[in-house]
Image 1 (cartoon, rainbow, N blue to C red):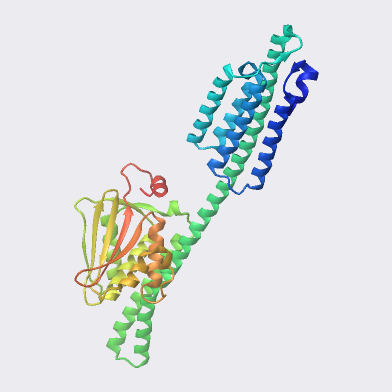
Image 2: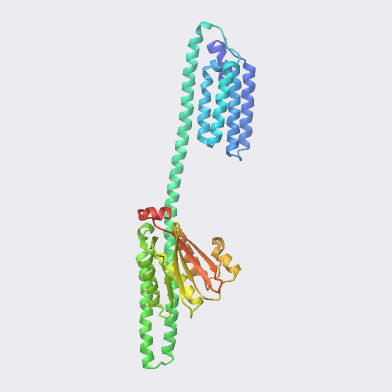
Length: 398
């Protein structure tokens, strides 16, 4: 704008109202300085306001310098291009409509240019078109190059963040497995301690033989737990997870639990149509923890395990006949933000590890009270679609 006011007369012999254009330039510069100082608000409306003020300033200058006959009117296009890059779609359309309206208004409303040599009008018009094209090219190239650099920097930052998240997920998964294994080994180790105390107190030979056999079973149980942990070590989550049929998997899990705890009683029912899910060792560990917790809550009653399909999700309900959980504690258990602050004894660590493992696979864990006494732990998991690959199932949770 300043160049138009200062150079039009001496270089091109075109008379323009210098003072009005100068006032517009000063007003626009003052506004830009105020906007920079108040740069805290960078929302869509603030950016739209800045571009609308620029549009108004250019419209005023073009009105003073020939309106639609001024070839510099095409400089409104870079303004719209900038708006399209930084504004939401509704704001961009508003800016575009107002720019077209300004162009239309300037068609019949403007001050004519004063030329010292009217014969040179066509020449200067073509020269102005060239200058407009060159300036528009420079502005668009600079802005698009700047945006491209910013997008590339953002993509690099996102790639680094994604790699960091994957590493963190692997560390968390391994920590869950290790802590879960330690939690599960508590039962056989406690049994071994009781057996050792019994042998030290001088048990009879027949009882000692039975105790030694039971000790061997518990040692094998501990070895199996450590073997599962070793199997998971060093593997990435997508490779370690596998697509499984829920029926055979639960059969195997319950049989393994019964072998480890002969006194454990589990009643299970399956849906009429079997479905597949994506599971890994951490989910296996989570279900073991939940069933063991239910058995501990009501040692003399059977743990009831049932499954049901609800749309694209599978729910696994683990119900016990224990004393139940107080409503205040139940609310804390079901709230992820307070679950980590539960006491470590009782449900605490097992619940936290189980919920974390289930959530990593796109599922959820919720506890509810039974009407006739006891508690139901409901695990909800996404069902693997028939033709989905394993990687897709892990990525989308289906």
